[in-house]
Length: 507
Ligand SMILES: Cc1cc2nc3c(=O)[nH]c(=O)nc-3n(C[C@H](O)[C@H](O)[C@H](O)COP(=O)(O)OP(=O)(O)OC[C@H]3O[C@@H](n4cnc5c(N)ncnc54)[C@H](O)[C@@H]3O)c2cc1C
Image (cartoon, rainbow, N blue to C red):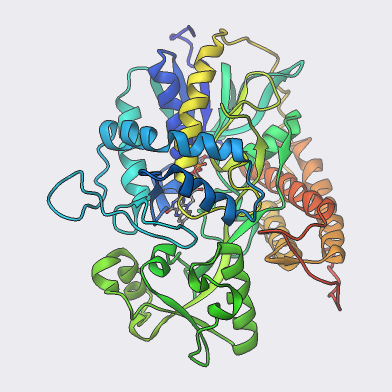
């Protein structure tokens, strides 16, 4: 066991406190290990998990149907073995953790607490989604964090960012962490990355602003394998005005339809399942219709919107959007299907390093994720990785921490913000819903230049915002590299012909 009197050591260090990190911490804590959760979140809502709307898919009695839906949504690119792991463990993980341990108040059809009101979403062949209104995430993450806060084996450190992994000879020994400007190494027998997604790389995203790809970059810089980075999923129905918010797939699952500026439905021309087609298909169709007619509206008149989706109706009211006449929508970055390559227990290619949740690549999403499978993936892989990390059973080993450079006062105040803006411009222009080989080449050149500038400052300076920027540029390069290497247009990686592309300007 770790020395409990030493706050800089733990048996298992979990980086991130979304659903995946919480599940990993629970798995390891239940195995009797001391777990330290370091999270840069200051509030639960800083994790994407908090924002999840539609819910958590389970297999009910039709496991085969669930597997087929996941594989079909992925355009036949999901790893069938990984899909088996997800689906075969879904019911038990949800029952054990969400229902019996956390008592999540999933919606029911009547007074019987076990008569769940299973929802349906796009590309799901049956009603199999447990939900709490359309704000499931906060009803899962809130109780999860409280449970861990009370757990005798778990220490939660908020507002604490991991900047780099501590490695020696291919083995990971913890992470260098920053809190309130101070940096210290946290040594651990096993380290679990659970840092979430990459939304901050895009101008329009559904993710919270801290989704800067930190875990993926830290893992890749330490030498861990990554895969499927080109598969960046855009959600088709995100409010198109200021303060964008997601309009859950459950709306279309319950009958909402998409109309262009002329009032016409267009999805039936794009896919036999119309509005219930896989996300990548709907997202591209929405973008094309917006381009062609100027606007796309989500028509919620077939539903009792206010009663069935009170949280979303409230979001509309706050923005003075009259949902009775349709809600203007446009695609926005939503989810990364790829990430750090892991096996069925969350093990990466580096010894003692695990990755779970959105920063990992388990293989279940392939080129495109099926709705409401991400919370479940985080839960199932989190528990498995936590248990495996606990069983790895080594004491934390103290290795040399990096020599920190914080003496150079020359980092201009606006440097990180300005470079982030520049990165988003490049990514939005060339690495969006559709890509061209030439655009990707330009993006690669521009991001490489940017990374050179950032690296120069990282050599002389240590700050959270600088390391987030470094993570974002490293992650952006991984996405662009994967997109350039993959000439097969599948799922979220959609290649179109090169034509009259504007020059990208170096600043
Ligand atoms: C609006 C919205 C709706 C969604 N709806 C659904 C849904 O209905 N069903 C579903 O299955 N999925 C849904 N998703 C996707 C799903 O919510 C996420 O993919 C999932 O919650 C990711 O969980 P995670 O634990 O991997 O990451 P997160 O929940 O994002 O947690 C990452 C954590 O890591 C921390 N962190 C990041 N970097 C560092 C660092 N360097 N050091 C320390 N801590 C760090 C963050 O602060 C955060 O606490 C939705 C996503 C969005 C944005």
